[in-house]
Amino acid sequence: MNAAAMRMLYGRTDRELIGDIQDAAQRLSIATRSWSTIEPSRAAVDEIASTAHGLQRALAQLAATKQP
Image 1: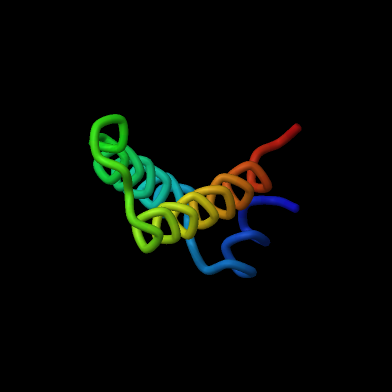
Image 2: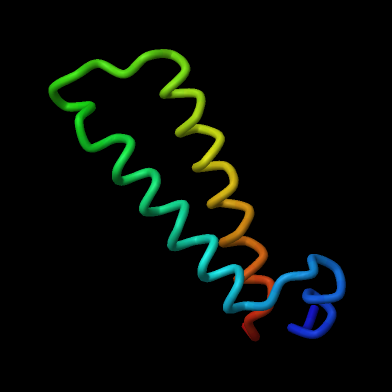
């Protein structure tokens, strides 16, 4: 699927996807920074899992816009 078709399907440009990817990666880094010294709560783990899932979807959408 080409980039124009992906934008029509998902409504986001590559630049927007890249911004989402960078934001999610930063949230993951910040949220997990203290995990080596402070055990995270279940809610914190669930939140990070959700963020990681969103990051995976955004990466897949971005990859789909690129030529093989």
